[in-house]
Image (tube, one colour):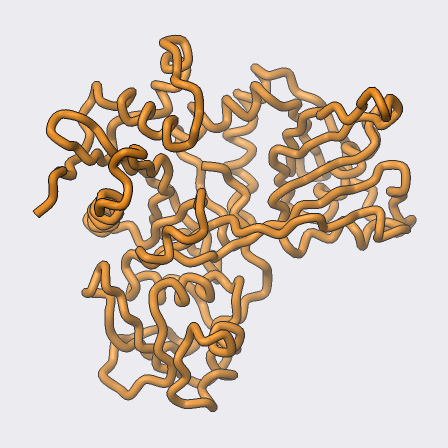
Amino acid sequence: MTDFTIRPLVHGEQRAAFEVLGRALHAPRPTDEDWERRAAGFPADRKFGAFAGERLIGTAGSFGTRLAVPGGKTPPAAAVDGVAVRADHTRRGVLTALMREQLRDCLRREEVFAYLHASEATIYGRFGYGVATRGKTLRVHKGRARFRDDAPSGGRVRLLEPDEAHELLPGLYERIAPYRTGMIDRPGVWWQWAHRRLVDRHHVAVHTGPGGDDGFVLYRPEERRTFEQPEAGAALVVGELHATGTGALTGLWRYLLSVDLVAEVRAPMRPLDEPIGLLLTDPRACEVVGLEDSGWLRLVDVPAALAARTYGDADPVVLEVTDPVLPENSGRYRISPGGVERVEDAPDLRLGLTELAMLYLGDRAPRLLAETGRIEVLRPEALPVANALFATGSVPFCGTQF
């Protein structure tokens, strides 16, 4: 018996949910003007509320998208955002009830995955989410950054005015993305709020290569000068950067490192294999100063998820998967280069949904998860086979804030 109920939000309840979310994230209470700007990108659809009587005490939302998986398919997914519980109602099962109802809703919508960015790393593993993409933070010292003679020269880069950016970037992103595993489509509701907020806070530059526009970067200056260090210079902070190939990527970085009155460029949440240091005569001019989890993945429909991606050339392996939240996913799955089938055979490896998510996009190898006690190995010779099956040709990357 609980002292709260869970139900979908109805139109008119969004602002209360937005205020619950803001309080949980320690944001200032929104003014009428703040809410007017936010309302169009915060619909009631796909949002759930926890109610104690008539009072909203918790919320969880998502928007529909598609996720790029190994092999190039983009199955339907839910991008989860806006999860919060009031501070005076935490640790009473509210979050658990919200997350369970949301996952059931995803299943009803025939969404194969749920995907989120976690505010705290200890929360979402309880519901079957696992870290599926990570990002590194780069710090590039402009004074020491010289491109090698054999580095791609890149194309032309032009700055956009805000109105131009609002008009051009949705179509450009749709044309060039998702170009790597782990990326998502960006629906209209995302562009209505998240993109508009980014553009309002950043400069926008677009790269044009031989085939047309093929990349863009959002960046903002950050003052570093102090009374003690008046010559420190500014930093450019990259909000996001997308490019379809090394030529466009290099062109955008050449541009960033050519901006005057700048001492360094800082770029958080970049792909783990982004090769900027390899393009420079002094690779130490590009420092990796941070490494963070990015996208947390949850397989909502395990059979559909396993069938959606491709596998390496190796013998079959039988996985036994346990899902306490959506028990219909629990079972044994025979995985081979030819596909996936549900079987009753003896399992080779036993794992939970969190571990399956960690290896699904290729971020972690089964061997590493087994060595750290996260996968139970029932047949040792199956472990290197699983490594080969789940190996991918690229490092996964999310690249979208939500």
